[in-house]
Image 1 (cartoon, helix red, strand yellow):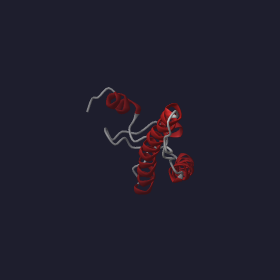
Image 2: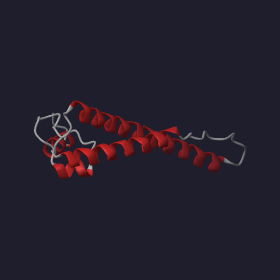
Image 3: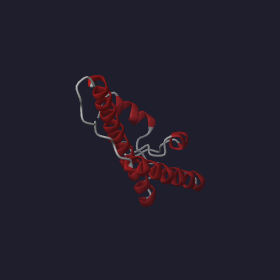
Image 4: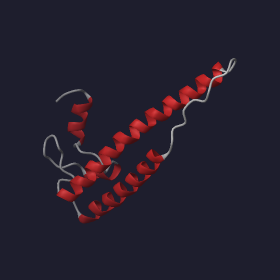
Length: 114
């Protein structure tokens, strides 16, 4: 992997980390007090809260992937598949700099194969 790609990946990962940290700092509103006749409004509030919690969980998982990729950049293993040890295609890293597996290993993982 060339130094240009490493530099671009580093900047992209730092920007993504900053975006995720900012997103995770936002408060999730809890549903307000229910009053008679407001079941639909309360249900909408609960739905929004559950949606916010699901998005927060996704952001936390994504942040962990970004942090792991930054660590791989620091320790010199960025661009090396964690499963097979082969190189991860530059095109894949340009699209998903937090990718830890080559495309073939990722396909196997998506199919549930070890």
